Image (tube, rainbow, N blue to C red; front, side, top):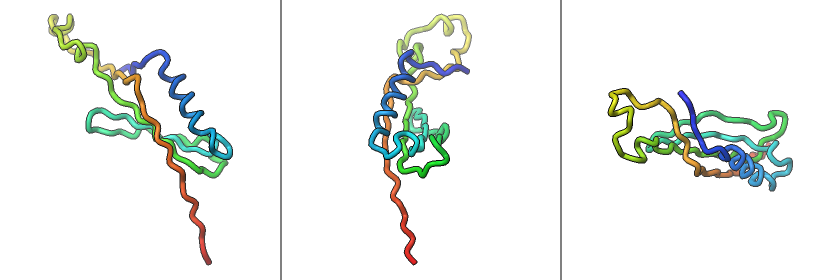
Length: 112
């Protein structure tokens, strides 16, 4: 199975994540990234990345990737594979659009 995305997708996403972390005391090092994949009503958490495990994490960024239609779905025409009776590929197409939501962690203060 292949995951296909636009050639400039990863550099754009990393640039946006870095920009959103600029306001943190130690930049991206204080952040946890949560990668999510949305396919219609299905949401899958692909993973969590603690950018620097030695630092206190002050924010969480939810990076939401969405499924894009396959070329066959987009064209809604009879593709060569359907005419030949072969099944379409199992490739996953990622939409060029994504959302990033930044949430600050509230610090819990213990009272004695």
